[in-house]
Amino acid sequence: MKQTVKPIWILILFIGFSSNLRASDNSSADSIKVGQIVNGFYDWYLTTIKEKKYSDFKPKFVESKNGMTTLDYTKYLDNLKVHRFSDSLINKERQSYSDCIENLGKVKYSDFQKTTFTDLDEYEQAYCDFGNYYRWTGGQEPIDGIRIIDIKFISTDKAYVTIDYFEFNSDENKKYYWGKNGLTLKLVDKNWEIDQIDSWKN
Image (cartoon, rainbow, N blue to C red; front, side):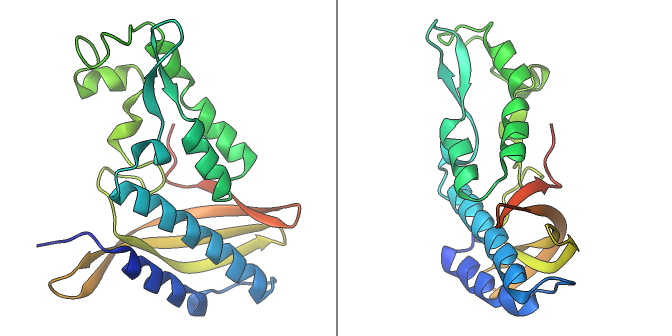
């Protein structure tokens, strides 16, 4: 039976990443820093998913001041900032919920998930189905961890990181790798920031 990986497995795998980093035209220090940012983000993201800290990694539905329904994504976006997301990507993420917020504004919070928004179709029609998939890995199933397989510097201030996913089978003490994702990082005021993740969808 498949069991969810414990945080220590993620940590061990992350520590081993540094020996696999590859770069062109940039220092090894830049490679390591970029790798640490990617690893740190996914360590946080996958851990909060596992621990079901929903408001940490996605917006939550709340009551607005006028008794209607809206979204609160303050904590979520603050966490993205802490984990080195660029302002442009955070703004893009914030803007992606505008249609959802507009549609929620027509729904009394006392009715929400009671007489309305009781099935997935309603969430999809209102552009509020973000809870049906994992934004930063893509897909509807959680993963156990990630592995960096390549770091390529497009220029002195832009890097592209390719990762794949793994599931850990505790019975076999083995990781099964599958799927891929890519992240673009940019150098802003001498600090690397995550500026795009390919699994992002509006």
